[in-house]
Length: 428
Ligand SMILES: Cc1cc2nc3c(=O)[nH]c(=O)nc-3n(C[C@H](O)[C@H](O)[C@H](O)COP(=O)(O)OP(=O)(O)OC[C@H]3O[C@@H](n4cnc5c(N)ncnc54)[C@H](O)[C@@H]3O)c2cc1C
Ligand SMILES: NC(=O)C1=CN([C@@H]2O[C@H](COP(=O)(O)OP(=O)(O)OC[C@H]3O[C@@H](n4cnc5c(N)ncnc54)[C@H](OP(=O)(O)O)[C@@H]3O)[C@@H](O)[C@H]2O)C=CC1
Ligand SMILES: O=C(O)C(=O)Cc1c[nH]c2ccccc12
Image 1: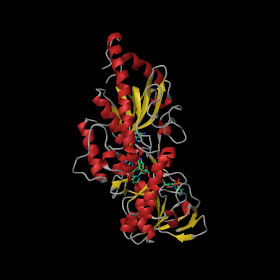
Image 2 (image 1 turned 135 degrees about the vertical axis):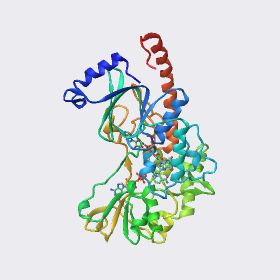
Image 3 (image 1 turned 180 degrees about the vertical axis):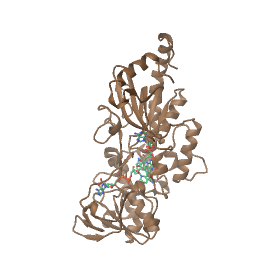
Image 4 (image 1 turned 120 degrees about the horizontal axis):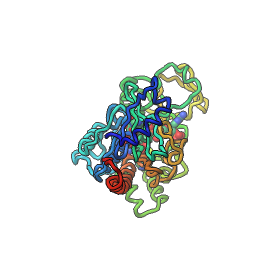
């Protein structure tokens, strides 16, 4: 909508003193006032927030840097990916998965569900708009965001509420390794890995033993490559299912009755019966149990979908941390030296919030996550919110989205009344 004229004049006045908005003395940036929240990111979290707001009658604008919704799932994941929690734990608010979807939907099915979700709630993100800067303007008492489009065009958005939904997995983590430039073979992050097809008969080193690294190793095996995995620290591997139930579902159920330490003991006992002693294969377990560790550090246990059997059979070799790389060669911290054709970095992801949100209180600059512990990280000051930074997957994002919508709805109603009764013009 058009910006109320008094606000427009004030913003233009400010832009005239900001060189980034000026080109030959002319303001080059398009400016738009959004009557409602601006949501940054059109992944599952952003979609959930937009849908919950819509249900409350609050319109929003969703800004997305890529050309599609759920860009993580559409562009940055491997072909064989499925949800590894049962579908009922990965639903967004107000819309179930279709009944004909399997318990663990494929990534194509999950994307189809998200497309359907956006359509259902008439969420039309503005694609190819990357938020480069967002800051609270204390004089205007509004958030001001600058986006950059595909051709470098800039837009300024001004709004009362800002919802960060750029995700915990916004940027790949690229480790620094001595000699990385000398290696000479293909080195790629899992966000660019699609399948093991291109690695047939090749010796591939997978760095990192989270869910991505473990599953990529299995995929490499299935494509007749020869994978090895770097396990530099401890890791909890649990079977995806126990006693005919999903390990995740069983854990949630047990947590209703039993303390977390006891549930962890049970999980480890059943894992030991089903998988054996993982330390025998180079996978030492952390001192803390899997759920306690997840709660305290956010580190997700590996839900095994067949990798461990390949490690046991020797099809996947386990190595300790990397000391340095040389031409097609890797030297490990225990002194072993091996030749590899390629390296896959399964070293995880990080949030990018500090790169665009100029704010110090709500988000930590260090890891780009809310400082307040779950479930209190969703709300900041001055109309700032976060959705999907709980380290609790889609379930956590859905909880945030519902809370945010309830909170904004309250102010929305108050402000709507005030605007119609006090202002000479209507903001709607
Ligand atoms: C391989 C993989 C599998 C997973 N499987 C599960 C699972 O089975 N169950 C589960 O519950 N969780 C799972 N997760 C956790 C994951 O966090 C969620 O699945 C989900 O994608 C998170 O949604 P999100 O919207 O918070 O983040 P994302 O899906 O990452 O979406 C964020 C969006 O913001 C956009 N964006 C980023 N920066 C900007 C910017 N500056 N300006 C504009 N737009 C921007 C991105 O392009 C992206 O589209 C998995 C994660 C990974 C990596
Ligand atoms: N099917 C599914 O649903 C899947 C879900 N996921 C989820 O996606 C998210 C991201 O997972 P993932 O990509 O595995 O990332 P994670 O952050 O979970 O794991 C990264 C791994 O890389 C290791 N690492 C990082 N740097 C180095 C280094 N320099 N040398 C050696 N090891 C290193 C880490 O070890 P350390 O612990 O020592 O730091 C850790 O084991 C998780 O939440 C995961 O559960 C991922 C894949 C499939
Ligand atoms: O896949 C992930 O990383 C998730 O965030 C899903 C998830 C949330 N809580 C968990 C506990 C154990 C295993 C997976 C998850």
